[in-house]
Length: 132
Image (cartoon, rainbow, N blue to C red; front, side, top):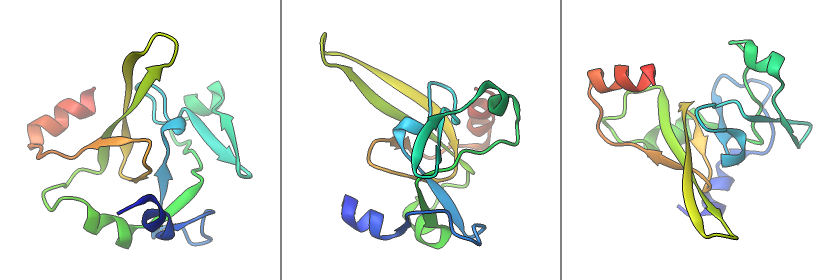
C-alpha cells in the first residue's frame, strides 16, 4: 500500500467510541526505549512531561487513528504479540553518520517513518523482549 491508500484508512482525530480504533504511531512520538516521547494536543505536537511519564497509565494521543479491523489483516498470521519492535533510521546530515532509535510499542498502526520487525517469535523470545 502506498501512503495515500494507508491514510485513507485512517481517521484524522480520535473517534468518540475509540475501543475499535487504535492510534497510528509516527517516529516523532517515541524516543530511544520510550514509547511515550511526545503526544498530540489539539493537532499540535508537545513533549511529554516528567509527571506524565511517571504515571504508568498515561497514554499519548496520536494524530491519526485506524480501525482494528483494517490493521489486523495486515499483520502476518503468526503474529500473536500485542506489541511491535520498531525503529526509526536517523542520519546526521553534517557527518553522514547513521544510527537508529528503537522502542517497543503497543500494537498499533505505524506510518512510513517507522520500520517494524514482524519475524516469527517463540514464547520464550517474547518474554526476553518484554524484559528488554
